Length: 138
Length: 201
Ligand SMILES: [Cu+2]
Image (cartoon, rainbow over all chains, first blue to last red; front, side, top):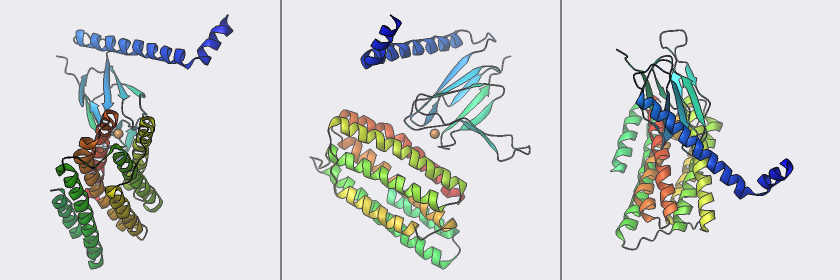
């Protein structure tokens, strides 16, 4: 029985394609509902997830306001790889050094729990810039 | 307009050079850029003015393939000859991104059943590219970096102009047109990138 199902799946690319398509629909619905949540409960100090799209060689939105502890997810929608790079503190012995995410291929994501605000750029395309700002909760 | 811009850039750069020999070679190079840009732009104007544009989708495919191959080829020369980390990073990005554009363009025209057909512009681009590569292969160190990056700036400006004014308006097939529109931000990001490097050389 199990073997039979497995056979159907692998021998029929259309079925497999449909499954992937349906699965991706759920993925988008899921992420969207998380995003809506973050808009509804801005004043609650719960951890929120913020999405930054990388498309047409821009970070969208370019500037994002978050609370400390929030998660930011970058998703590459471009055909070209991009990464998230930031310069490490200029005052320390790390001067001139950078911190860089892995290169994100099309559809790949990078997640970060935010501890402090920072400016960042794409190390492969330095004209692409963005900023994480810590929200002032007064 | 863009001829003026390119000449202005090169005048600024020639001041940064010490020796008279360098000033001379730079002037020669700047002349090459200007002639190249004029030819490209005048062929844009011809295509724009004539009521029935001569550019077919097969021509556009050939231009896209040719223009990407040229920049990949120059990038490989830069990786072989430059030791400047910023220049090398830029060259690697050119190889990666233009290979991606090339592959998606080839996949698209194959699917559409379009066979690329060379035209005058492809001939101009490839002639200019082999002349430039011949110069690059005689240079090393800071001289190489300057020649490579200066040309990348001029080349990306010229190609952006061609895509915007000639290829996008000229494309008949909607998918081809959309692909051209979608690759434009890559070329603009590359132009900004090499201008940033140029200002530090
Ligand atoms: Cu990038």
